[in-house]
Length: 224
Image (cartoon, rainbow, N blue to C red; front, top):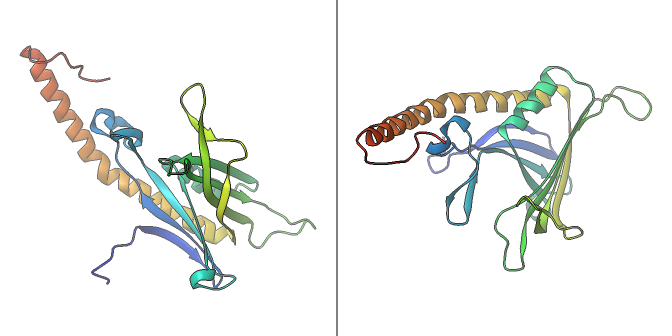
């Protein structure tokens, strides 16, 4: 046991050349949105938003370790992790999932972190033979310039993306299922551990507000 370090790794698949792992980045919703359970980007400080997510890290050792190692990261929502788990658990043959994100405060050059994540399952190869490693996970991470749409959302400005690291790993059905099964079970355990206190605290807060309203001390609504 390492008494100086606690790992947030949930699960991993590792070969002599590649590694994919899932990382605990889950965060509870704020008290005033307790029923969400997971944080969904609500502002918790000036200019700072918190999200509940599962991190995915890909490491490519095929050209060596140390400085030659390639590392790429992306994040998915807990619901996406469950979606991928059920695709594997149900034995869905054709799976195509892709997600592009831009996030974080722009740096001095106006650039924010950006990721391209692709997860797919291909049942047979070009000759019609069953794939030994049908699952493919690829991540391209880098930076881009944020642009805003009419609804206030953000997206990558066209042509602004610059790749910094890119990795891809082929995975067997069994290994991908185990990766997502352990991740799914952890999310469930986290929810069962976190939600009860969050719900109790929210109930206590609503009772406090109700008491104040009854005494004429506040006009704050009990709920949104």
